[in-house]
Image (tube, rainbow, N blue to C red; front, side):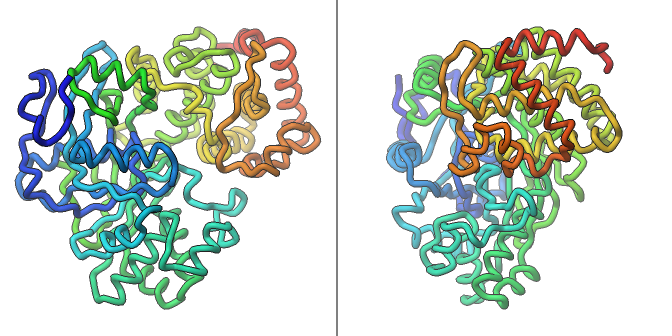
Length: 494
C-alpha cells in the first residue's frame, strides 16, 4: 500500500479519486472545532468539492481538537504526517463504493497543547466562519431549562481565566473578544450538530458565557455576530482498526485516519452569515431562509429511529444498525414508529414528502457496507432522547395517541442504563452527559424517573407504571419476546 501524503498523490491507484485544485493557493477561512469522523465525511467533503470551483480558495478548513484523549493525540500525530490528507470511502446501498482523498483541511491544531495558537487562528482576519461538531452533550445546557450552565466546573474555570479556554464556547467568546479589541470584523458561528434550532442554542450559549465575563462584549456579539442554524445528515460509522485495515486494503492506500460513510448526504443551511460564506449551493447544499422544517423531519424521524432500533437491538445482542433494521420485529417497530407516531404530527417542506423520506431512511439503515455500531448510537442517550424522542412523546400525550411503542423504547433505555443484555453480557453505557449521581438513580425504580433525562417527557403516574412494567417484562422474558407481543397486539396502522 502507498502511504498517503502530498508527495504520493500522483502515485495512488487509479480507483482513488484525487482533487484537482492547488492546495498551496488555499486559505483556511473556516476554523472547525472538534474534527470527528462526521465532520470529515460531511462538511470537509462538501468544501472539498467546492474548492474545485475557482473563486473559493479562501474557504478551506483549519481543524481544532478540543479534548485531550488518545483519539485526538493520534490525530495530532497522524494528520501532519499525512499533510492533513485522508481518504473517504462512500458506500452506496447497491454495494458500489468510491474512494477519494479529501484535501480541504489545511491544518490541525490540538487545543489542549497550545490554546494560544488556536486563539490566534480564530482571531486572524482570514477566519470568517467558526463551525463546530461538538455533539449534543457539548452545549452545556441545563436539560430542564435549556439554559447555559454557568455552574459547570469547566465553565467556572474559563470564566476565572478566559485567556486559557477549554471548551468551544470559551474559545469562541475569547476569540471574539480579541477581534473586537483589535477592530477586526467578527466571524459567523455555525453549529453543525444534531440539535433543534442549533443556531439559536449556540447563540444563547455564547451570549451567556460572554455576559458572565463582560456585558458590553455580550452586547457587541448580539449585535454583530450571526449564528445560522443548519441541518446535517450523512451516516458515518466509527472506524475501528479492522475497519481501517479493510478500507485501506480496498483502496491500496495506507491512511492512519480513514473515514467511511454512506453515499447519501444532506446539508441545509440558514442564509445568515456576517462575514461572507462559501457558495455551497454549487455542490448540493441547500441554502434556505428557514432550516426548521427540514431539521424537525430529520431529528424526529432519522435520529429518533436510530434510537428506536438501537436500544432494543443492543439489548438483544445485535451489533450494527443494519442487523437491527433487518430484524423483522425491530424493522417493523421502526416503520410503525415513523408512520404512526411521528408523520401524523409533523409538517415538512414541500420538497421533502415524509412517507418517501421514511422509506429512504429505512433503505439507508439497511446499507450492507455501512455497519454503524449500535453501541455508538445508544451512547449519550441522556442528551439525545430529550431532543429526538421527547417532542413526539409529548405530542402523542397531548393528542391521546398510542404510546405503547415509545413506552417500549423508554423501557429499553432504562434497561440499557443498567448495562446488561438479554444474554447476560455486561457492558458499560457511554453516557458522558449523565453524572455519577444521576447514574445511581437509574438503578432504583423509586428514583429512575427523577433523572434529568426524563424531565423533557410529560410523564403521568400511569406512564411511569407502564414503563416500569414494560422494563420488568423485558428483564424477565427478553426483548424479542416482548416486542413480538407488542407488534402482534396492534394493527399495522395503529
